[in-house]
Image (cartoon, rainbow, N blue to C red; front, side):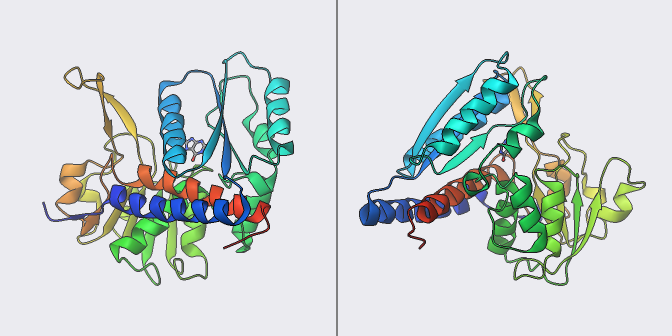
Length: 297
Ligand code: GUN
């Protein structure tokens, strides 16, 4: 294998330790414990495991989670009422509604109902608009984590050609925008590829930074990668494996073996982007609490 593996777990641990210290300092100064309302609707196994991981990480960082589990049959009105309660609760500084929501619920309306000051996911139209304009806001956690990983890897974005594969509202579109911003971790020339892009490989082969955020296991193969490129694999795909303890394995969007033969640096799955998403959520939550307490660090 040629590529150096970028250790997202280690970077996330460092970030979480900084957040823990910041939360402790806030508690010391003001008596406020940062708290995140976490809403999970339904019983999608992947969503349940993400939410559990987020709640565990909050506890480890000395923060509080207000865990709200609702059945899949929850109505839009019930869900909006829960969000209104959390909006009004001064002891709760952030609100996270795990996506996707079960069929029948209008995710756009639900996200819109979150107070932008508590929108630590960075999903509300206000925060997305601020991000596009380069204004101070909560950045969405996965794209923000990817920027931190690039920094940690020592891969400059300025002047680089970044190719983002996948145009989701949560990852691909915001990340493409952030990479193109006039900012220390931006200034890249960005190509955003998606399902309707003809000859995907012609684009990915020109990438100094290749971000795979498609949501399908192994779609990026070594022959699609420029030698020496930094490859960030956002995919977390459950692939059936009868020999694995849980009956499945997590696989990224990259075919790791072949891509790692060509790339200069690569994030693993698991242990790459996933832990950084959680770390950035904790960071946003402590920032929200500091602002609410009138005590920004
Ligand atoms: N579903 C997949 N990623 C995310 C995330 O970052 N936040 C929320 N709320 N839901 C998600």
